[in-house]
Length: 69
Image (cartoon, rainbow, N blue to C red; front, side, top):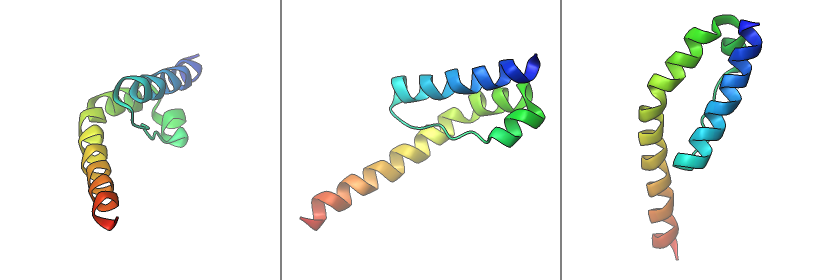
């Protein structure tokens, strides 16, 4: 039952990150299965740093596209 909840929470968290912040939150299904609730909490806490990494990478790609024209 906890494992089913963990995968539903994983899906909901990924959808939230995509809809609210426009980035794909990558979560490992193996870790979700093994660590379930602990991994979900870890991913929630790590989401801010993942968003910062995404913004850095995305802004570099945009600037490269603008400079390459």
